[in-house]
Every structure is written in structure tokens, then in C-alpha cells.
Image (cartoon, rainbow, N blue to C red; front, side, top):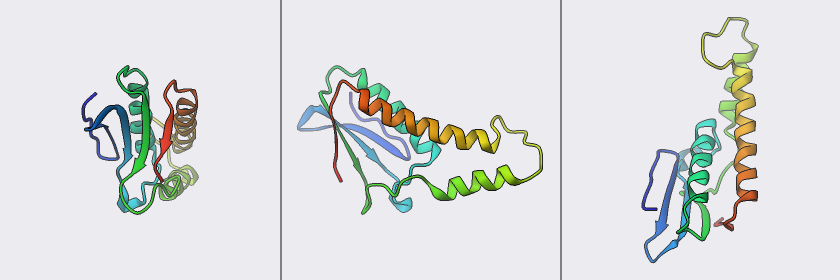
Amino acid sequence: MSTTSSQLVRYFTRSNNSRVGVIELNNPSKRNALSLSTLHQLLDIIRKVEHDGSVRVVVLQAKGPSFSSGHDLSEIRHFQKEAMEKSKYKEEQSPKEKLNDLFCVCSDVMTSIIKSTKPYVAKV
């Protein structure tokens, strides 16, 4: 697998060893906080890497001074604020559903890493 880039998460193989896949959290301005969008991108990449027979080990790293600050609390507060408002929502998901999706996708990311046939190494 060559290089695949996205705004919040990048995937590439090491140039000196294509058997090492690297997943990089790429949002240093927010200390690589795990937003819903970041988690969806991360899960998609983890699933692709799992099916790449050329990659034997995966390094999980982050750009910037922090590996990750955890969940994006500003996004969670935003979902909670929306949920407390009395107006009807015309979006596909209600704020409560978005918050539930956030934690379900996070759980899927962690479970996918645990169940992976490839070892993951966190470069912290």
C-alpha cells in the first residue's frame, strides 16, 4: 500500500520497509483530539490495513507535540448543548445519536486494534 492521506489521519508505509504501516494522527492544532470525524477516518484506515497482506506491523503515531488529548471535548459539549435545545432536528442524526455514534466508533477502533492479526505499536 502506498500513501493515503486525509486531513485528520494519514496512512503510509515506511520507505525503507514497506512491511511497516504507519497510521498518523494529523491534527496537532487540536492536540490530535479524537473527534467523530477523526475516529471514522481512523477506523476506515485500520480496516484497510488489516486486509493489506504486505504490511506485517503497524505503528500508530501522531504529528505534533501531543500523541492525543483524548476525545474532542468541545465536540462533546456541542452535541450535549444541541441535545438540550427544544427545537426539532432536521439532520440525519439527532445530537444524542451523534454522541452515541462517537462512543460506538471509538469502541470499534479499539476493538479492531485488539482483534487485529497485525501487532500495533504506539509511538508516544
